Each structure stands twice: as structure tokens, then as C-alpha cells.
Image (cartoon, rainbow over the protein chains, first blue to last red):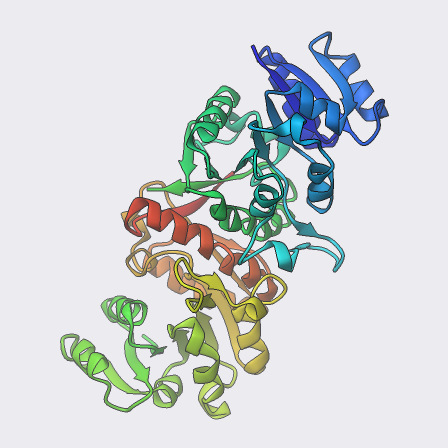
Length: 217
Length: 217
């Protein structure tokens, strides 16, 4: 199996990393410093297929990269990577441009929504990397186990490169996703990221994130 | 049965009007001029329960009012109404703040999205009217016949007045909606209106509007 780099040590990064290792991938989790405590604890329980390093070393390690950083940090982290570490690779972007500065519930950064998106801005910043936007509209647990939601939820995907989307669909299928909807080029990230406000209101209403959207048709 | 005023003579207004008359309501369809040709043609086939008039007379007529105007016109139309015609009434707002000025697909008006919404702006403009946002996330045919979509689609609703939402839920139930999700006060209109961009991309992909969202949980 292949090697995958994960950027970010939060719940999303660690959950996806565990699933990828279960599936047989080698995974390096990257953070700002070489020996992040959360990353080390994560790797310790997972055996030799799990390793840790800087963002740069995790990106270099992976033939595919997951961006699991927070939306407010994503562009800074990704712009700090060397071209060699990311050139021609598939980067699966799960981040959301959530702006918590105005209180709860968060809004989206105005410069990264509506007529733009974080997915597009990342694609512009990394023109030689193939950005695919997906998974950002469900909780971490559901990302890697959609079967925990009855009724076969839908997962949107978008990006400019067809082969990169095919590789991503293969991974999503391994995660258990059966209803994957390709909305086209990376500009569709606008709509996909704009699902977050209603997701958050629904989460506040239900008191948990154990739900997902389905496009009935 | 009661009297309902419909503002707007487009597909949404005429479809909802037909359904309300089927259900036994008296309906007056309002437009800028007293005898709009589309409105007259609509009323002609529907018998004595259907009538036409100005926005003002349709609003005065109804004990409940449906705002089915285009997003770009909604605020102007609603601000033009006399207080007497709308005071203490329920206004069900189906409009979307779609900005077609930058081409297709439309974005949302920046001043009416993300940290604001058309629903909220209408509530601010009409402080003595009870605004309820709903139905804006499906095609006109599905608004009044959700059973045409397999799997029991979800319909979001929000507004500041509980009794107004209860009245709206009764109407939605008469339309056939079974899974109605109350997201809280009118600020939830932000998220509900922000579903439009992904709705439009999905519609472009599918080539029709015969789909709807479901919150699986």
C-alpha cells in the first residue's frame, strides 16, 4: 500500500490517520514541530506504520496528502511547504474557513466564501498540486465510517484534476462512502464549504454531530 | 379556511397558489400592478377562490403572506407595504439573495449572506411582522409535493416567533412535508440560504431540480 501524509494533529487528522493505518497505509502525521506530543501519543499506539514529523516531512513522505489543519491556519501551513514536497501530488483538503472571531456560531471568512473558497485559495497558492475538496461536511467519526449514519449519506467532492478525484474516490470508497457526488471543478468548494453554517446549527440543535446530508434523487 | 396573500407571480408564487387553492384556501396573488397578465391568467383557471391585485392588496388580503418575489426585489417590495397590511401577520419568506450580476452560477449578495441573510434583513425591515424562512431550498414543484422525492426530504424552518413557526409547520404538513427541522431564530436563515450554491451546482450536474436534501440521523 501507499504512503500518506497527514497535516494536522487534531481530531480529524488523528481519526483519518487511524483509519488509513487500519486499511494498510503507512502514515506520517505532521505538525509545526518534529516531535509534537499529541502526534507522538497518536503514533505510539499504532505500531510501525505510524510516524510523526514536521508538516514538511509529512508532506514529503506522502504520495497523497490530507490537509487536516484548521481553516485559519491552512494557508500559512501549506504555503510554508517546499515545492518538492508537494509537486504533482494529490492534496485532499478537509479544512473549513470558519471564523470564530465574531463568536459562536462561527461565520465563514468573507474573503474565503461566497465568491471564493478556502479550497480555491489553496489551489491558487499550490498551483502544481492537485487539490480535491471533500469530507469537510461531516464529523470526524463519520468521515471514516459513514455506515454509522443510516440511509447512505452523500459526500460531495470537487477539484480541477480528474485523476486526482478518482484517487480520492478510491480512498473514500475504502472509508465506506457509497454515494459520492462530483460537483466539478474546485470552484464548487464554495458551495461545499457554505454547507457548514447549516451543519453547525443542526449540530447545536441535536447536541451532537451524528448526522449527515443526503441528496435524495 | 383562511385567506392567504402571495407576493410574486413567478413559478414559485403560482405553484404555491395552486396548491393552497387545492387545499381550500382563498388566495390573492399580488404584483406591482393591479392587473398583471401572468397573475390574471393564473387566476382565470382556478375559479373564485383565486384573485389578483397589487402587492399591497394581496398582503392586506392574507392572514398569512408568502413572499415569493425574487431575492433582488424582495426588500423593495416588502418595504413598500403599509404597516396596516402586514402588522402582526406571519410572512413566509421563500426568497433567496441570489446575485446573478457576476454570471452563472450566481453567488449570494455579500451584504445579505454569511454574517447576515435576506431573512434577517426582511425581519429588520418589518419588525412587527413575524418572518419565517423556509422552502427556499427545493424546486417549486417539490415545495408543494415533497412526496415526489423518494426518502422523505428534510425541510428547514427558522424564525423568531414560535407561534408563527407552528402555523407555518401546519401549512408545510398540508403540503406533504414530514421531516421539518426547526433551526431556531431568524439568524439560521444564514445557513439555510447558504445551501443554495451547492443546490445550484447539484442542479447543474443533474440537469434538473428533482432532488432535495435530507438530514440523515
